[in-house]
Amino acid sequence: MARGKTSQAGDATQMFTAVPQPAAALTTPQMKQFWKAQDKILAEAEAFARHWFARRHAATKAALKACEEAAEANPTDALAALQAFRDWQAQSAERMAEDVREWVDMWGRCAGHFVTGEVTAGAETLDELQREGAELHSRHATPV
View 1 (cartoon, rainbow, N blue to C red):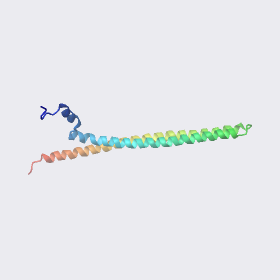
View 2 (cartoon, rainbow, N blue to C red; view 1 turned 90 degrees about the horizontal axis):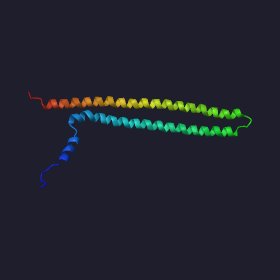
View 3 (cartoon, helix red, strand yellow; view 1 turned 90 degrees about the vertical axis):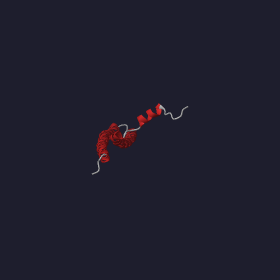
View 4 (cartoon, rainbow, N blue to C red; view 1 turned 120 degrees about the vertical axis):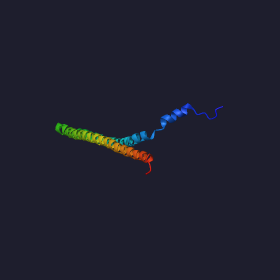
């Protein structure tokens, strides 16, 4: 009874999943460059996070050292305790400035990865369209 019948669902699936050749030429380079840029951006974010955590660990150790120095200071020498905390605060300000500098640098590099990917994808798309155009032209050429 079901001889030779094709399902309409199968035809619809093929219609949506089969990418026509000209569309593939337009989308494949963009998709490829998008994911390459994503990978580079993730690596940038990972490096930033690693450096940020290293600075937070340094800050924690420096704060602990300042607390120990303040606790060990002569009780009559309040200036020594204040000096320990002032040094820690100065180092913390340097770490925060480094956070900002590295954050701005990271986003600049990420934007560069994105823009470079877009430019590369555009060039690849143009090359692919020119190649397909030449192929179509050669198929329809009449022999002399």
